[in-house]
Image (tube, rainbow, N blue to C red; front, side, top):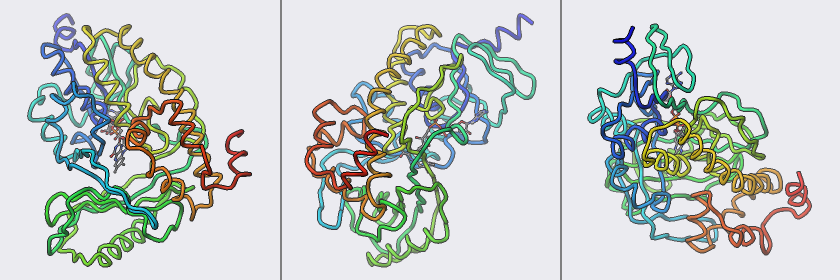
Length: 381
Ligand SMILES: Cc1cc2nc3c(=O)[nH]c(=O)nc-3n(C[C@H](O)[C@H](O)[C@H](O)COP(=O)(O)OP(=O)(O)OC[C@H]3O[C@@H](n4cnc5c(N)ncnc54)[C@H](O)[C@@H]3O)c2cc1C
């Protein structure tokens, strides 16, 4: 029994090898190279099937050292195209492809990762696997991703993306973050383009919709139409990804469970984008750079960040209510068109989910392009 405890005793046990779990593993190996960490993932690979993207301003310079190892590609700028407005923002943009995430983490941390493991139960100090193994730790982290069917009222950011090989170079030099010059069906809609190489692209068709379901065949044909309209001929489709991210119209504080949660499982994300990256990275950094891997310390750190998050989230959910309830689906893009005319620093703080008071007033100031009556209802609902 003693032997079993020694062998199966860890400083940190991470359950879930997606974005949050993988980042924590990498950060702990940087800040606590001597620590015994085990990551348990139910699937055969880490990271699922995602392309995760983020802005330079989402990353603190002190993260660069360990995070950059996981980056698949970066671009020096990005562009947005609206019917009446175009802007190029000189701000670096990064992407992590989940297959790179898997390979790079496995290369360095093979002995700290258990794939294809189902868990039977977990608490704040212990994880029991389906095969009966018991693992103990100073801290257990639940990084199992989105909860199924969360309660509450939501809009959705839903999308389908294809990595495609083109027959000839596309000529793009920066990321096309949003091309809104497409029919505004099913809410605010835009095409998103990441040029991986001269002839390879990720192209995504995204909808800010009232419903979560998407029709892959219809969206694929829309993507093919867009490529055709740009004069780009496809040689082959390399891979496909899709998602439907819930965007809360009201935020409820999660009831604190005894197991510490990180990433989507904590319900902490930027409510307007549905992205977890900035919030997760900030927390991963704070936990990993703490001098001890200690349950009480880590709980205090997460509590502090969560408190700040809920202040921001209340406001961001108000923006969601204006977007999903006060504006007509075909006119939702007008709110975003106006948003992208604002100063770059404000746009960056929006993505980080760190708007200051002046930013918040500025976003609502003037004439937001929504029905005034509906906006008032959205404000008070
Ligand atoms: C296609 C797609 C693209 C996206 N792009 C972005 C983006 O660019 N930026 C961004 O911030 N967000 C993006 N998102 C949102 C994205 O879901 C989250 O930001 C991110 O993946 C959440 O990370 P996570 O680690 O919390 O959850 P996940 O990445 O979902 O990871 C959870 C992991 O836990 C594992 N797991 C679940 N249950 C168990 C269990 N019982 N035992 C062991 N393991 C378990 C799962 O298999 C999975 O590997 C995207 C979503 C999709 C679907």
